[in-house]
Length: 181
Image (tube, rainbow, N blue to C red; front, side):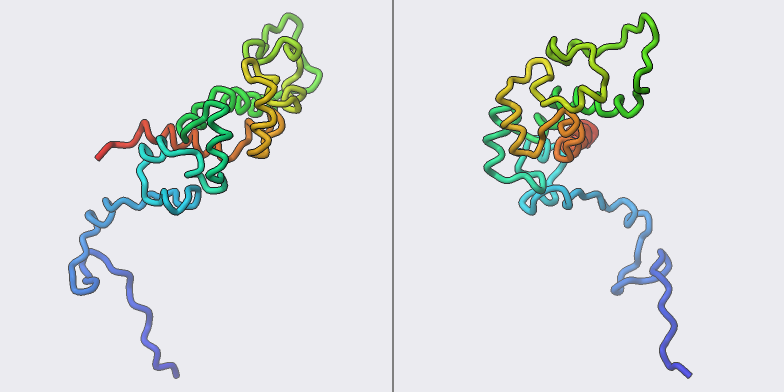
């Protein structure tokens, strides 16, 4: 027969923890949100506003030297990356390409992405556009292909699925929703 005591019940508002009464309402209000897994240690515990203004190397997996690469693309902060129009265009193309029916286009359809693409690529199927280099996006110079390569982004599909840009976009969105202390 075992002499081990049964496990203790979890603390509730009627129980005591370390000699103090536990107030469930107060406990529930304690902030628990964190995104420390996706930011470097120096940025743990920072607010969304602080992260929004932080350099891109604040994101886990981006090195300090990559800040200079980002600056050549006019990306100086997490906010810049998260709101970068080329990422958003590519993300939209990636998302919609998943819904495209190959070879199916209704006669007279006006659907196009002409304002986002260089003239030589207008009229292509979404899935074909995804295989193009990022510089196929209107306004992004050819030199951007090599710069984005530093981030392992080689195609429009890569740009639209870029993990760091997705996280930066989420941080930029949440910064708008965060109450400043």
